[in-house]
Image 1 (cartoon, rainbow, N blue to C red):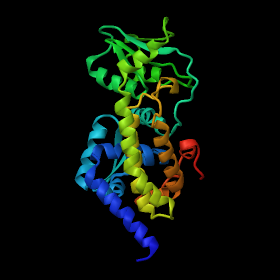
Image 2: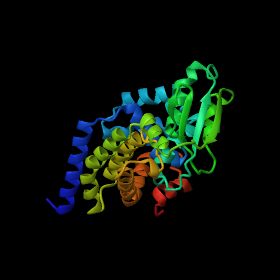
Image 3: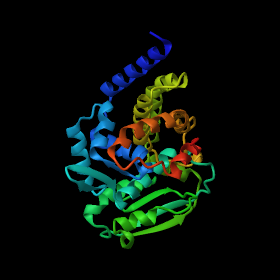
Length: 314
């Protein structure tokens, strides 16, 4: 067996072992593929193309159809029929959710520029409809907020451009029920670390990051040795981003001043960044080969795709 074939066989064996050890849930994997691969190309796809795209992950047609149906029912996707074929696209609500959930994946870790102030969201006792509370808290959690007390969510204040918080509150019709403040606690400096311990389980997040790196380091090294198969690039990239997404959703992305020593987040980010830069051309080639045959061509990636992880070469 040639060296190239042997390396491909090792990657194939790793993929098989990984899928057997940690089979991804169909609906969650659809969300990952849509956010990572489809959204930059217009965010729509024929259902038949999506079925073929997910086949290498062991996700069968029935599971794909059920997952897409549920996402449409939850407002993430909308369908268009063309005879017996269905084409699904992101709704405006779905696009907003993807932007909030995925922005943190590709952006570099927090800079050491925190000024010691905190953002605080204070909810009126009956200011939010009960049906919206769970989803609202989940989205605010994606933005790094956690409960310090009943009706009080906090996070270290961030220097950012257009804040998504007002948009999130508007989407859940909660503007009138929540007030936002920026404040700097008085007293001893230890308060900040006490709040961190109360609001976030950073030890658990650190374990998740280290487990993630152990899981993927070996196969990432294999890709660095050669020009890997395009499908393998897409499959491993998807599994990598799928796992990294799950960890980052638990990570409040606190300022470095508030993190424990030897925080593993930057190393996990670097692993994703380096693999993405190494394989994105071949992964995109596989994506195009599967979806271009569905009619109507395959739109090129939007400009923001090439800004991921600090910049990808077109």
